[in-house]
Image (cartoon, rainbow over all chains, first blue to last red):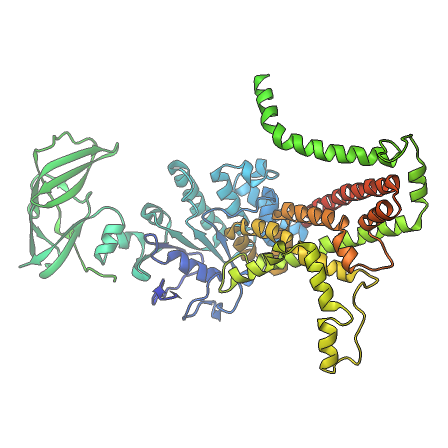
Length: 333
Length: 282
């Protein structure tokens, strides 16, 4: 997909199974919304194809596609009340009046909106508006629901609540979901599969656990969750870092980039990968403490359960099991 | 109390002037239509001017004609301005030029436009000369001062459509793109999107356009005088005729009050019609 000389998407290809929840994850400008708009029919790709059940969709206008979108801004019709917003799609698709009323009532009940049926969108809170947007999309019984960062305008607590509701509803109603977000926590919590996009290409594709525990590229490791990354020349399967020698399970040699997660540490010396650094800062986070260690020009981050009582400047010894040290490529473009 | 006084003082220069000018004109017209406040004669309360005028067929013809011109012009101007406003909602190559061309008539005084128009459609005007010279017509066709007032409606459209365009394009550009995309995504085609989303959300601009154009066209003098049918008066030309040629200020005042009433009721009916449409399309 090109916009003038700029290539927004390049060689992106993926398939979705029925009732699968796929997340397009990536930083701003990586092409995820462009891809969603292509699937919705709002944009036509420069080249490529889009098939659903074997038939090519590219020539089909958005209004005739078996998909519905939940917009980032909700995009509710401001002049229609909640019930009419939800009924809009079925009415346009020629669904009979009785059936439309039944669908609206069901969705109002499912999403806890009965008391708000006659209200205009501007009388609703952000969370309620998002529920109406979801109900409106589901009212046309689409095979595919497209979500364009639907939770980005909600506060943190509400975001958690609505994301659980979306996932529960997806399982209950049964629809394929294509979900765009730049929030890796949202992607990990909701998805069956994640497509990690960077600069218009798929950097990595896999289940949330795959991508988290087995990132293939430096970008994937860094973007999803927190990661400590060391790059250098390994000999005999060991990379000498400022914190000490670091060994991987696969014994990679030569120029390597090694990654380990902050929570994959044990405090104290270990049999291998026994490392030591000076405490630069400690941030108590409630369930865990973030400890930032420095050695030479390098810093690493540890996540330790509970409250760690250490002072800045003290030496702290820790170890990382070799199977938790992953060798990644520099990847991407 | 002090706050109320402050508000009143702040409003006084603007609102006060409008009320003083409008109110005095309205008051004078109404009074004179009942024989009072005469400048050139005795003043005495009388219904005779209304009785005489209401019995005159030319009065009713003028009222009917002005209503026709104002209604047709306002409806056509809005009907033409809507697609143009929608077309120019998003910029494209040449859209600025097109937009400037649409607004150009705002810079040309109405009377100048009327004379230019007459030059084009006159018996020996541009169109007739061109058609006869190219052999497409045997002889010139009479287009000027046509009996149905088409020339006046054309001029009204030419002059008034940019107002409607300005108001509607502002409203149309204010429509959130995701709302239109959502409607499309939910199965609404072009016409359905216009009826169900664009029309209700821009109804206020449409209403304002219709009312402004209706009032302007109902009270038109220059287009009617220059290009209107010779067999019919508009309310404005009838008023001028009564006062100027016959010196009958009181009858002219009756027509003036009628014109104001037409503007008021016509605007009210158009406003109600728009509200009705808004409810209907929901």
